[in-house]
Image 1 (cartoon, rainbow, N blue to C red):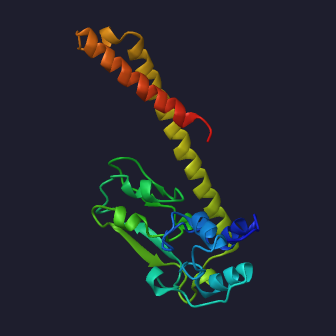
Image 2: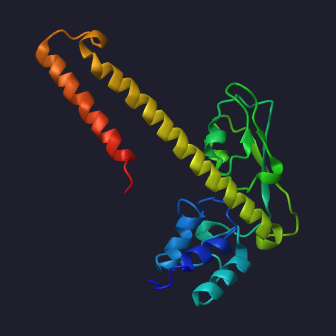
Image 3: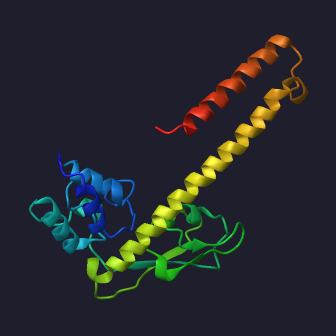
Amino acid sequence: MTDDPTLAERIDAALPQTQCTRCTYADCRAYADAIAHAQANINQCPPGGAEGVARLAALTGRSAIGLNPSHGVEGPRRVAFVDEAWCIGCTLCIKACPVDCIIGAPKRMHVVIEDQCTGCELCIPACPVDCIVLEDATPGASGWAAWSQVRAREAQERYAFRRMRIEREQRENDARLADKAAAKLADLSRHSTLTDPLALDQKRAAIEAALARARAKRLPA
């Protein structure tokens, strides 16, 4: 375990930010944290390739080793495309994309913003009709030679914004549900089909407990 509080941040900055999860961690930052705390090897990031391993070796003082093939192999940057003839507009690929580079609406064809696609491949298993294909965008170039620090930073920013958006939407939805529950609680007998006083008291207790849990979730850790 490191005593350097900045190591995880510097490791994260050295990763390609594809957020592909091939390292087996939830995102690039989680992998960086694991490396910094000696819980993961430095050879688990196929998008970074051999140069990526060398970068991490220099940061951590570990020896550079070959990529672990169980996580994948180094290759060109790949871009996803949606076959419009088969797309059913289910939005599952939109929800799976870690950098919000797929646009569309329910029951409408979806489109990948090619320049923003990180090639993470997470949209592939999400598609129920197998209408997404990957094409090589950098033939002859792989790893960091097929990527760039600018692209990595932009992908990191889009990923951070997506997480912030999802958290905000969840908070807003929780607040709407809490307001709805509080309104029913204020006049439970009118909003419920129950007439037995004991049953109403039990219902009231259940709603109050749910509201208490919701308030606890909103409190800072």
